[in-house]
Image: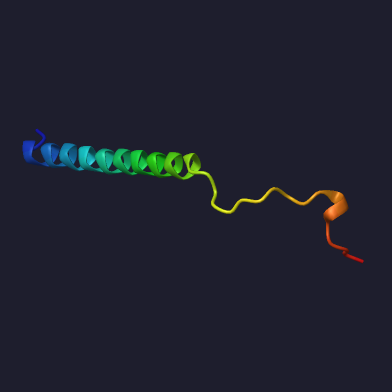
Length: 56
């Protein structure tokens, strides 16, 4: 039959891998939301066409 220690080790490894992937996904989501929620400093609106520089 199957040795219990091998099965248990596989379960622990799968659980650890799942936890690592899940925590990385949560961290990435939090960083994304944090970055999007802050207004950009010194963000000026684009110039109007009449104020645009000459590009000939």
